[in-house]
Image: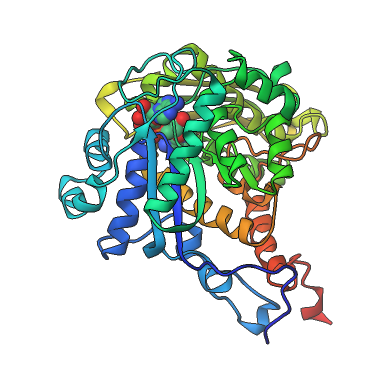
Amino acid sequence: MSKQPNIQIHPASGRLGVLIPGMGAVTSTFIAGVEAVKQGLGEPIGSLTQLATIRLGKRTERRTPKIKDFVPLTPLECLSFGTWDIYEDNAYEAASRARVLDTALLESVKEPLAAIRPMKAVFDQEYVRRIHGPNVKSTGNKMQAAEELMADIQEFKARNGCSRLVMIWCGSTEVFHKPAAVHQNLAAFEEGLRKNDPDIAPSQIYAYAALKLRVPFANGAPNLTTDTPALLELARNNEVPICGKDFKTGQTFMKTLLAPGFKSRMLGVRGWFSTNILGNRDGEVLDDPGSFKTKEETKLSVLEQILQPDLYPELYKELYHAVRINYYPPRGDAKEGWDNIDIFGWLGYPMQIKIDFLCRDSILAAPLVLDLVLFLDLAQRAGMKGVQEWLSFYFKGPMTAPGLYPEHDIFIQLMKLKNTLRWMQGEDLITHLGLEYYD
Ligand SMILES: NC(=O)c1ccc[n+]([C@@H]2O[C@H](COP(=O)([O-])OP(=O)(O)OC[C@H]3O[C@@H](n4cnc5c(N)ncnc54)[C@H](O)[C@@H]3O)[C@@H](O)[C@H]2O)c1
């Protein structure tokens, strides 16, 4: 029985251009992965849009289509990729340098990858200090830089025959900045662009360019970027969906699996010490205290929000939470993250949990990029605008409406995501009440 959709969704016809500032480990692994999947060389493991099903109606109805058969998503064959980076490496060279994927696999996708050359970046050494590259625009002021990016976007769209675009920031983590006066409204921001205000980060110039052209924008790093009143205003005015910040992949992914479990059983947590070693370029950038501070903010906020110490002072008020990241080149992209968790149970008796997660950062991040790109495009075709809270599932620091605290519990986030898809298509929302089965 097909239902009446709640909103009209335009079909995913034509090509979707995926625009990515930053062509490092995550971007090259994502693009190489899409090409490999298209050639049948691998499975898109980790991607909800490609693999997950969605239950519809009552459990007795046994309706569980794949998400990609339930909502109209762009097929992988219809994606085109455009990137910017301060290095001139094409996607094949960037992937080889990142050493995430096997040489044999990369050779099989060399042709499409080698054709993807990064456009000149808008870059500011004040925001990313540890890296230096030649492929940078030399523009007058920040407004002119934004205009050059808009020209890049339009040229890319025409050259690739795209009918729609999305942009996702996979560039380095920028140095920590609090929102300043220039971010308080769009007029101040535009004036700041013209006056080269030092508080406007490169990622914000990309975001501005995208939103001006009504291109949906996602932020995979913890930088402020669109999480400011000025760019929210632009997204709302131009009716563009946005989401961020900071892909939830390794250690924080683990945290958002475990912490809701402890809280659901009313177990206390006294300490959570997390440390990582990471040897890729991201690790090198995060070795700079300014960039690490940006990362630390999103990593630390998660536990506080999930455990709600104000509501449960006897369980979580004393929690000591620390996060460290150390740059350790021998491991490359294969990160190792350790967690020591001091919990306590009945009558306050202490217990410990140790986690040693030998993960692969970009292998975990690539499917998130794919899902975000496809879902943001879906959101735009469905006329959804501004912050897309239903995509919180993918982020360590989910953006929300001003004044609303973010939901970090990954299981609630998943329910929110799937219920949004059900709502779009006019299906009943699933509350898991289930009393009707026992009437
Ligand atoms: N891999 C993960 O699991 C994960 C999880 C959460 C967040 N992230 C974030 O995703 C981002 C990408 O990660 P990565 O491992 O690919 O890093 P990376 O260092 O390999 O790639 C980042 C690229 O961005 C480029 N860059 C920096 N500033 C730029 C600018 N202004 N314009 C264009 N290019 C620019 C750099 O030259 C570099 O090639 C980082 O910010 C990282 O913190 C990654």
